[in-house]
Structure formats: structure tokens, C-alpha cells
Amino acid sequence: MAAYTWFLTGASRGIGLETTRQLLQSASNTVFATCRSPATALDLSALASSAGKLHIVQLDVADETSIKKGTAEVLKILDGGPLDYVINNAAINRGADLAFNFSPTDLSDTITSNVIGPALVSRYLLPAIEKSSRKVIVNMTSGLASIGKNLGPKSTSYSISKTAVNMLTYKQARERPDLIPFVIDPGWVKTKMGGAGAILEPHQSVTGILKVITSATPTNAGKFYGYMGNEIPW
Picture 1 (cartoon, helix red, strand yellow):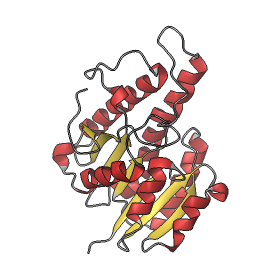
Picture 2: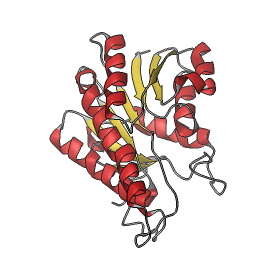
Picture 3: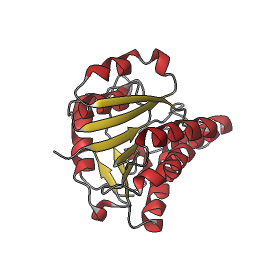
Picture 4: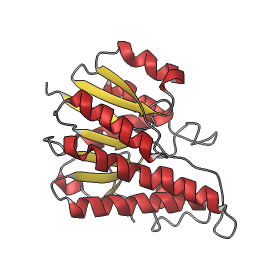
């Protein structure tokens, strides 16, 4: 079985934690799992005894200095080796704001975490991504990013940020046709961000997401998918 290296942000809870858990079930996977506070990420630390190899790295996607330090640590551990899969999962959602009633600070913070963070993570990890035979970059998005789905006025700042990360991903794919960057909507998942009304268990979403990611080819680059592999309108 081929051995693969994985990197993901926001690994201490929710979709990120479940993704790490599922990946580490295979001894062929090495996972670089990042979070803002490794010292308090007890659920993540508990996965160290899994079959796969786990490296927990401190990284805050809202802070470029932290991104530089965390990605440098990953490159050092890889020691010239490849990074096969990058999953930019970490994101914030400041709530159900509206187009005529949002906080400029909330919008700015959301753009910083949800768009600039993923862009910089992929930029700083590029030397290792380029050495891979896979070269997959997944930016997690949301159905709320789709104008075509016509989901109404809710969650304006979050929706704007996710539409922006979709465009970032499209631009990455067009700039670098040798890479496979694409976006995935994980669905409405029962996490802290998803809230009480969510319908999907994390393991259901992540099982689908990982099938899409591991089967990705260059034809997927620059496209928008659901967790079951269905293409979503822009």
C-alpha cells in the first residue's frame, strides 16, 4: 500500500478531528494536524496511538506569523519529502448577519481566517506539494458560497468569505495546472459551527469527503463539489 502524507488545519474538533481520526486508521498515512492550541487539544492528542503517524503542529490561520512558523515545522519534518494532500479546513463563522446589517470587523476577520489563511498555507507548503505525485489542495467551502443555489440573505460575512475561497481555488488551478486544487462543501454537519439543527454526523461527511479527495484527478481542479462528489453550481 502506498504511503501518503496529509496536512490539515482546524484538526482539534468537528470535521477536522474526524478527518484526522479516519486518516490515522491506516498505517500508510502520516498526518500533520494543526490547531491553535495543541496543549488543550486533548481529543486530537488521544489519536497519537492510532495506526498512522500523527504530528500535531501549532498553527493559527488568522496569523501569518503563525502560518509561517507552522508550515516551516512541517517542511522541516518532511525533510525534502512530498506533501500529498493539503486540506484547508479551519474557518470561522461569526453568525447570521445580513448584507445591510453586518459588522465590518466581523467581515474582515472572516476574510482573514477563511480566505487569506488558506491562501498562505498553500503558498508556504508549495515546495513540498510540488514534490508529490498527487498535489491535491482542498479548500473547504460551503453551500452558502453558491450564488446558483439561491440560499437567501443569511450568514452574509461567512457566505462572502466562502465565495472568495472558491475563486481563490479556481485561480490556483488556472495558475498551476500541475496541481489539483478544488473546493468541497461538507454539508450541514453536527459540529459546534453547524449548530443544533444540523443533519449530518461528522463521520458521514468525512467518509464522503475522503473518497472524493483520494480519487481526485486533474479533471477535478478548480471545481466545486459536495461531500458525495456531486458538482455544485457556482
